[in-house]
Image (cartoon, rainbow, N blue to C red; front, side, top):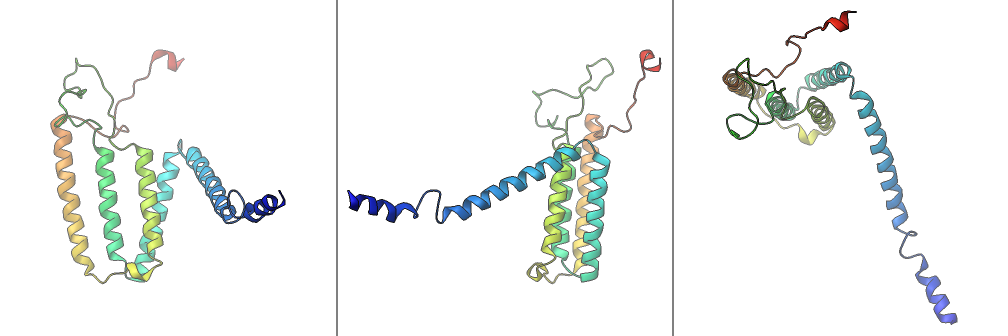
Length: 197
């Protein structure tokens, strides 16, 4: 009986909740708390699109100033440009493409057809969040010299401008062909008589 008790004491601190897993538990608890605080900030910023986009513009400006002063990290900047161009295409594209999915709901093409609102493939908040995350990752990469690869930056810039132009031309043709506008600030808003009183 005494041998079992001493064996139990010997193995007591080697597994379970004590010993080595205690540090892992603390890290997981800290990470969960940090994720919860981040989610609270994101939830509070959801109804404030102007402030969110101004914050992103400020961080992008700081990123460009940093890369200009360092005179480097052109590959990182090019990758950011390509990734954010891809996000922009998802933002201005309809969720259901009329060319590939003929069975799904169609955008109205005549005035007597039922109005169906434009549903984006990538919602505005997810677009902002992905763009913010990419710029912050790119900004962090500028602190590590291993990401500063020697390249001739004018070629990358010209290639990105060409890619942007071709992609946007294709997207605008798609918008004209299927008669949709991905932005809502230019659409008519009607006032009812009850709202005036």
